[in-house]
Image: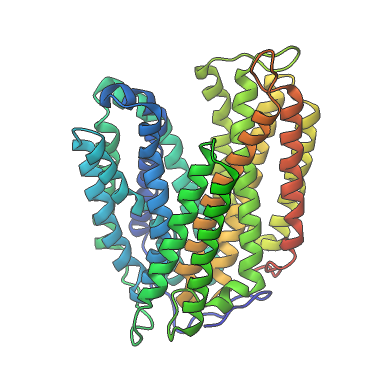
Length: 472
């Protein structure tokens, strides 16, 4: 296993299979449908509470279950894809997701729905598997662009899911918010099976590191559950310390096993390489900042304080947040082009500086709708560019046989960063609430924006380790 930190990855032997447009289209439709299925629950959560007769905490389990499963499955799927071939593992994963979609769409109550969501969580592993297919089927100069397009389509699916969940649930029933995307996933998977060239497996002569798989899964499970418990609030400091100790103990045990494994689940030298750890630091920062703004901006839209806040209703807030979602999709589409032309280091550095500047500006100017809309849209666009740059850089900076595991780790790290950022944002607003009104004081929002700016600014220290060469 080799890692190239500051130079382009070596061209693979031979020539990539010639991939046809219908195959690209099938992979794109699959990414779009998966993104849709991932986000349909959030807007329909109040309706699910009424229909299933459960409280908000129980309904929140539906989304949390998918998140936890995804964090566990993504690195395993990426590793298996590196070993057995991306197409083969992707189709197996889609069988699980489709089964989960069918269960969710036919669920008579919450228990069956949670089982369905557990299976659907396997969809998170589709992203690194798609990157394996992109790496093996596209010429080196086009890989970054293709990675950006796949990421953009996954994000675009999230927008579609948010938009169609309400009409489907209210016009037909809540079962259809799972059924419709599942039908598209099945059709797109058949298209991938028929049209996508088979990619050759690698390193089948060594045994799978099952102890490493188990310990990594346990570590991620403990980490995600711990974050979700802590974000729920009301956890005593002693319990928080216990959670940290459990996660740390599992992580240490996993590292010890990986160091002795003949064919480790994750090559520790790869994690220590500047190309990957710097991308991990930046990924955490970008995801955390995005989650913080997803908390601050809607809250500032909705709150009506003395001289601050806009007092908008839910429909208006959703409308004003839509430009940011569209900007995220556009950023993924052009991010690959930017990386190919300017290099990952330049894109990430410029993006982090721009994001810090926007956050400082919105800390001072947040009195009107257009100021918040512009700030959120700019941060979403730049964040999408940075994320695409990091994925593209990682996908091409490691050896081809490590593409899946390396990119899947970034996907998991992004989930962790998002949960952590949301928790920090909530804590800042809770600490700065006005006792008289119960709403967060304006100073809490200002503090939050400045903290977010500090987080992204500090991540610049890691950007210098990214690949700087431009690929023609």
